[in-house]
Length: 105
Image 1 (cartoon, helix red, strand yellow):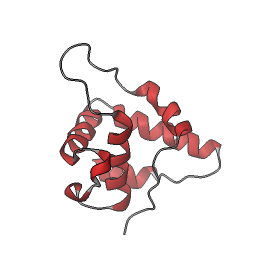
Image 2 (cartoon, rainbow, N blue to C red):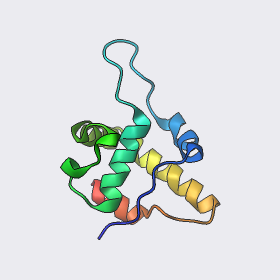
Image 3 (tube, rainbow, N blue to C red):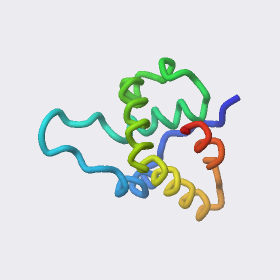
């Protein structure tokens, strides 16, 4: 059974955006980070298969690859930490570190 999913609010997005790598200066632009993060969170919190991620969040393959890369670069850990800090400050811990960390490896 998964957790309840809600898309990132504008305020949450502003809080985590600074930890994300900048867009590459050359080559193809990276898929929209906010949509991709919402897709990643959707899969992790609902427990659905990657292939069942709603299309409005972009390609599930892109989301999966981005999560793996961000895990390797410790960016995902920073994103989760920022969201937890924000939830803690607001008195609502909607993201459970143990669940997300164990899901992500």
